Image 1 (cartoon, rainbow, N blue to C red):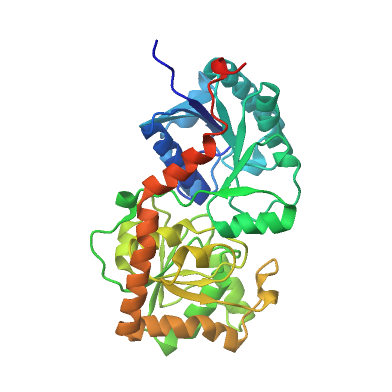
Image 2: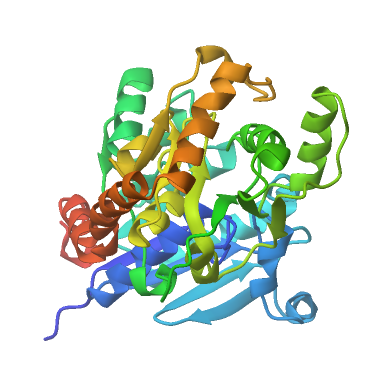
Length: 401
């Protein structure tokens, strides 16, 4: 008799097809790799996205299906996503009725699919029920944690394994809450992000939000607009919107601006290869604990150097493939709107100018970035870490006593 495949259920309110969410992109690729390695994967979520722009991946008539069903099935070979149709794409606007419907659907899937492991992320009270119900049924539970937002441990009371991407985040939560996190690396399909050619012209910044350092990038662009008009920034909007932040920071600096001559805005896109093809430098001046920017890992795969802050795991990701800037602690305080002193601003501007003007130094950064990229380009190594982390928990339920 052929032994059945081990079954993993991913259960979360967010849609994993969300191209504006690094966490969703990572989990989707992890589940793809598990499927390729013989695991049976089941995904349930909802039509919830970090950005309404990312909801464009859904069928044009997806809301019309509410007339006949409240579950949307989406094929994503080798995966299939089953999503509760919600009135809003925003998680904060989900009603208690919609959360109850999702929970009923989750119970139904537990009974029918009979997973050997339940995997999720989220720290809201309703998310506790995911792990609580699985524990009640004696199903092991894993969680994914790649941000700094968790301040208590109730959410993981019924969790057997917490996965993260970088050692920086594992250390952060060990010191903060005494939690044991297992780093498994980044999960990126190199072929999907590797540009076929590189022109190395633009300074790339993705997702202009305060916590990701949009204010710093705006101050850099303002400083260089007349001083170095040859340096051109490309800003990719995702969850963050550039214009209101530009107006806010430029007004604080004395003159409200609606556009900058040295900045091009690009909408959110599922295909980043053209952007990496144009990029000479990637900026990631994060002001919060960013576990490990997916954009940076993709930049390293493309051998594009980066300039980052020493916050979170970004310095760990780029290794020597760029410049790491340390700032005084006051800049890392919410709401991340402090203006940089001229000397602190130059800590970003000077390495950027060197990467533009000094070809020999730039080439060294490129080579270091290429070496870092080899780590992220080898998805099999991360997959082995993931499987090894799961193995102690994974035993078919019908084989358990």
